[in-house]
Amino acid sequence: MARRLKSIADIRRYVAGLINRADPGNGPLEPAVASKMAYLANILKGIIERGDLEDRITALEDQFLQREDKA
Image 1 (cartoon, rainbow, N blue to C red):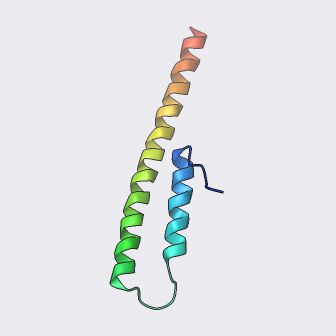
Image 2 (cartoon, rainbow, N blue to C red):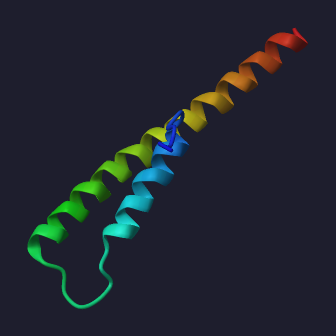
Image 3 (spheres, helix red, strand yellow):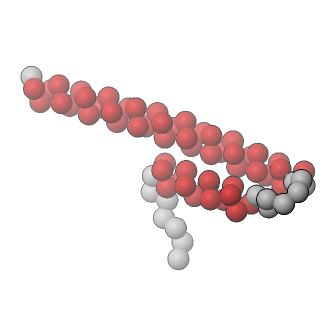
């Protein structure tokens, strides 16, 4: 069954799993494998940055809504 990727956290876990499975773990990496892993790592970096930003925005929205409720 295909995995459903519904959130940034889901995508983060999925891409991290791809990176971990692609790493042969034995000896030096072939250039083609290293290049692919670096590409995946760059994608994961962007996902993590966007996820962190999403979390911060959500926290700010929650704070704003709480202040509105008190007013």
